[in-house]
Length: 408
Image (cartoon, rainbow, N blue to C red; front, side):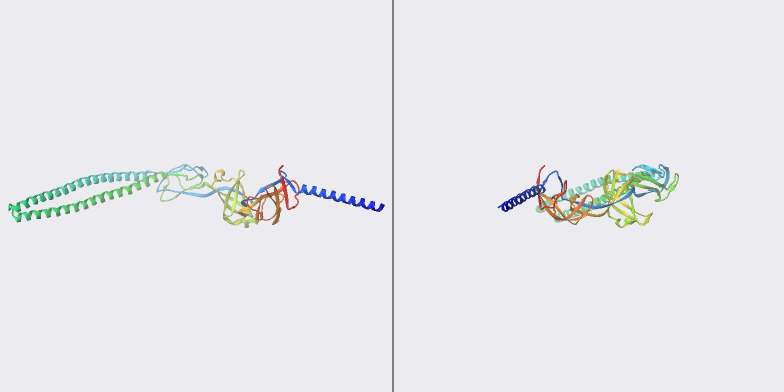
C-alpha cells in the first residue's frame, strides 16, 4: 500500500514537470517566432548597378593644345599676351596689319558699285526695249486688222463689179505678208526678252559672287586680330612685332581649358585593371562624376602606370588646372541587376537563407547571391525587384521557417 502511494506521487511529479516543460517551450516558441517592427532593419530589392572600385590619384589637366595660325599674309603690329599668361575666350593675343585686307574690301566695294550701276542700266534698257517691242507688235496687229477690214469692203465691191479681181487678190496677199511679219516680230521679241533676262541674270550672278567675296574679306578682317578660341594658357608665341608673315604661319600655341581631363596613375601591380574605355569616377567636393579611361601610357614610370580619364560635361566647371582629385576605377561591375543593401543577416556565401516580409509575416527563403561590395550584393535567384528583405536585427535570428510581425 505504501509502495503504491510512492509510485503515484512519482507519476504526479513527472506529469507536473512535463507540463511545465511544455509551457516553457510554448512560451519560448511564442517569443522566438515573433518579430516587432523597429527591432529589425529591412530593405527593398531594387534594380541598379554594383561596382567594385579601386582607388587612384589624379590631377586635372587641359585635354588638348590649340594652334593658332595667321589668317593671311601680313605684318605683326602688336602682341598682347606673352607665354604663361592665362586668357579668356575672345581675348586678343596678336594684332596683324589690316591694310591689305581693307584695300581688297575697298576694291570689291568699287567693283560692286559698278556692277549695280550696270544692272540698273540693263533693267532700264530692258524696260525700254519691252516698250518698243510691244509697240511694234501692236502696230502690226492694227495693220492686219485694217487689211482685214479692207478685204471685207472689197468683197462687196467685187460682187457688184466695183473693183477688179487682181486688186482684191493683191489685198489678200498683203494680209498674208502682214501676218507673217507679225509672227516674225513676235518670235524676235521672245528672243530679245530672253537675251535681256540672261544679261540681268549674269550681272546678278557676278554681284552675288563679289558679295560672297566681300563677306569673306570682312570675316578675314575680323580674324586679323588673333583671339583665344577658348579659355586657356599661352604656351608660346611664334612671332615678333614687325615681323612679316607669309602664308599660314603658326602664331600661338595655347592649352584649351574649356575641356579638362584627369592625368591619373596607379601602382604597376594593378596595371591589369587599366584598359581604355573602362569606367571610372572622379570625386570633387564629395561628389562622384563618371568618366572613361582614355589613353594608357605604354611604359611604367617610377613604379606607376599613367593614364588619362575623360570627364563628363558636368565636371569641367568644377575643376581648375593642376587640381588634385581622388579617382575610383571600376575593377568589376554589373549593371541593371537586382541588388540588396549589405546587412548583418547576409553572409558572403553564394546561398543565403533570408527572411522576406509578406504582409504580417516573414518567410524564410533560400537566395542565391552574386557580386558583393561594401554597399550592395547582387541577387541572382530567389528574390524579385520590390521584395522586402530583413537584413539585420537587434537580436540573433533563428532560422525558423516563418515569423509573425507585430507593429511596435
